Image 1 (cartoon, rainbow, N blue to C red):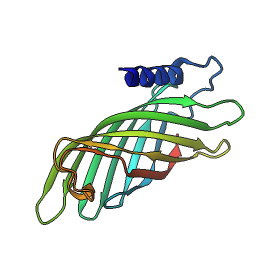
Image 2: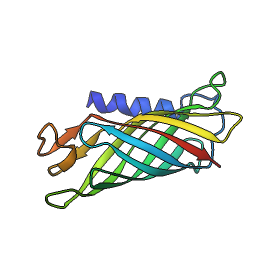
Image 3: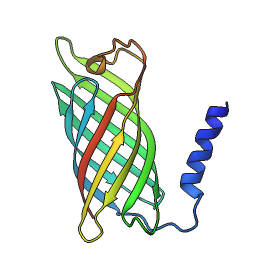
Image 4: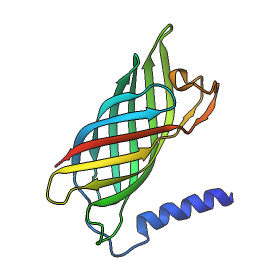
Length: 166
């Protein structure tokens, strides 16, 4: 219970903790990313939409090693400060669907979390991001299953990318 209270407090601080916040970085950004770590490395495209300054939704599709992954990740976004113009941190979680592979076709729904940082160049419509993407599985995670996990938590995934901002 204490752990949940700490996580809720952190999210509350990130969302509402500062009255000296910048405006959101952008409305829509489209780009590419590399999802790497334990298991196959994937490359893909993503679209991030920020309807408000505190929230965003990332839509992503990745492919690699015969596997295809689709993710939709709602995020809480916190613009750091006036001194670091263009820097934001974010946290979120959402559903992911993975299909493909060999010798048998894998079709798995799972939950993917995200904790990361994003930096938008102030004078140019370019944004860079890096994040940690742990996954929670209900069934055998297939190509990520290098530690032979039948169900559970896979912490070893990271993503790096570049987006064009609108």
